[in-house]
Image 1: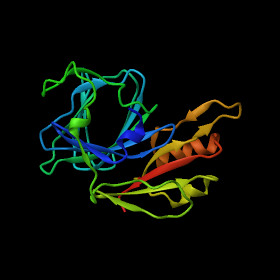
Image 2: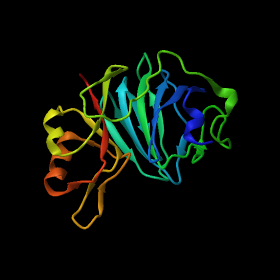
Image 3: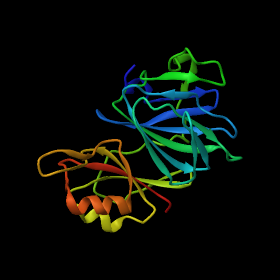
Length: 223
């Protein structure tokens, strides 16, 4: 199935649910709700890189040999083939964005699972239900400052014509590239679609490297 097959559905999971809230030819952005004390499988994506951003609540993100805790507006990049599992440690559950590239929902291998799905692929149509009015749809990028509310955080999808956008960012904002990125003078990619980065790091990079043409990014903020 390609990303268009998920545009209008919520995918039920034993730990909660998820749904697609934005996609283009390069990235897919999913919203996950993980219920309290539930966890995703210990899984990896052999071909995809993944970015996670917590919108509200707190998760314990486990790898094969260690774990970290992430709360609102904390982010992490998970490179292909790295096994990971997310557990909600908040009483009200946790909401997070998952950003993936390339777009391929079948790119999934489970090592272990509390719900007996170790040898199963991604959920099929029997787990689908129609989206409702509570679902978030991230708009296409534009030049305005329009924000949408997203479970305690705010989302703004922008076009980056030059580095003037940096002055409008708050220090705790998280930036997710949805197209383009930053490049060296000889065309090497420094930041790519699906990469997640904080403002301070991005300011340092922007001093040395250049914006690609047609760069767009999702800004995740607390206000």
